[in-house]
Length: 329
Image (tube, rainbow, N blue to C red):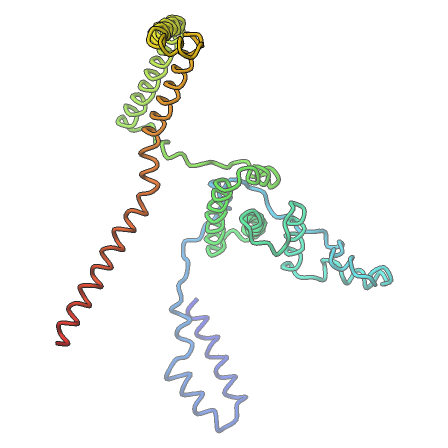
């Protein structure tokens, strides 16, 4: 192989020297023979171990391929032109995909897919990015089926797969409804959400941890069921005890409010009920204040820290001004 390339480059160099003027032959000959201008081509990296089987990227979440348009199909952009219907069949055939590049055909299909799923062709949202990556990935997979021994193409496909996985996870975290709609429309059936607690079950240590976790979960369920049963059985007794205590408190308040009721003419029971309700409201407010004390203090903690910081900053400025005034003396 090296011998063939060397012979070919020497033939090209000699042919160039024959065509060039006499004044340039000396310089060209010296650059070809002394500096060996074709030598870097021999040092390029050659992939000696190329795959012999087609790689279908089993770790991807979908395996559909890009379907090119019919060569006789006319571009939708051309069909929207006002003068299109007046053209002859010959000129209409010139506007079909058999006279356009593959890139233009892919762009038309991509824009049609974006508009079909409710996106503008120039939109850059996460959903539109997922659609673009899916269409590009399918096109490159089809090219990889036709050219399976291209290592750069395989690397590009793997990079696109990882990029689309990140975008799909981002879309799932930000807009679950749109995520479900897109994976159904694009037929991405193999989607897997990474579970941080999903561990391999081949290691005995991991097996023991999983068994312990399931056992603890069952114990929690058992305790919760017992608490529910106890609550159902003791609910009536609890309310009976509360009713007895409240009646006892009403009787005590009735005895205490006898002088007040005699002076005002109201019944002792009504006065006791009003006092008891007022007492309950005070207790509720007190408990609300106790419960909200910590959240309120946390909410106002930033302002207190800011005030302390401002005081310290003002103290540093005052100390700096005092030292400067002493130096001026």
